[in-house]
Length: 240
Image (cartoon, rainbow, N blue to C red; front, side):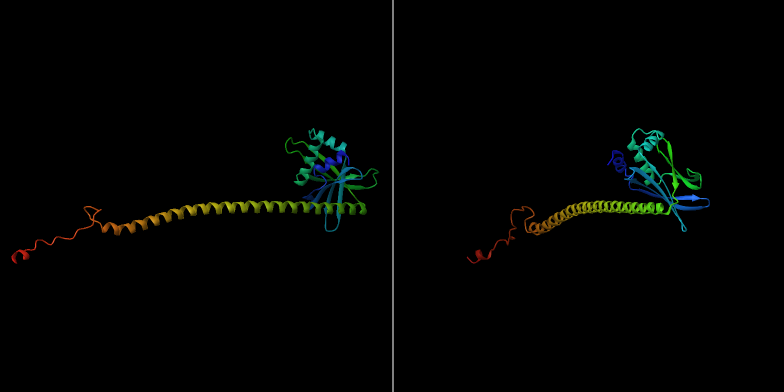
């Protein structure tokens, strides 16, 4: 595998698929824009597919390493990989404009439609425009459609995997939050119940001590009360 193809893979240009409304005249239809690596030619294929009720239109163009170097200069970007990342991000985010134009083929015998796709850099506002030409051969259209369908399926698989990953993270965070709340509520209840039990025991102790105080002397609490005096008995002296 060449270094150029490997760089295309690292920048995710082999799985870039997006959909965007495409207005032709008074009618607006959805157009699918996809990119994939042609391992035979070692180039990047950019495909636009317009699916209408009565027909399917396919436009495409190919980009080799030299084309990427030219586009990098137009975008005022130094690194080739940065240019590829820019193109991948713009496709995945549907951040591009579409325009249809008529163009004659090389021998001038018939005209085929042309779609211009313009990508603008979000920072320096430099832009590039790629020309995609229509495929009129049915076998070529079928081949491109199968590739587009394959890439859509791959993209759906990637999105499904990303959704599962995010759902697992959300579930994990929710579980941690619930456990933290449970620990917080549990510590608060234990502190409140402890104070309540202390106050209850203290009040019980005070109540049990009250009767003991009532049985003691009010003047000298350490002594018990004496029996009341009965006076002097004179009956014994008179008997003498």
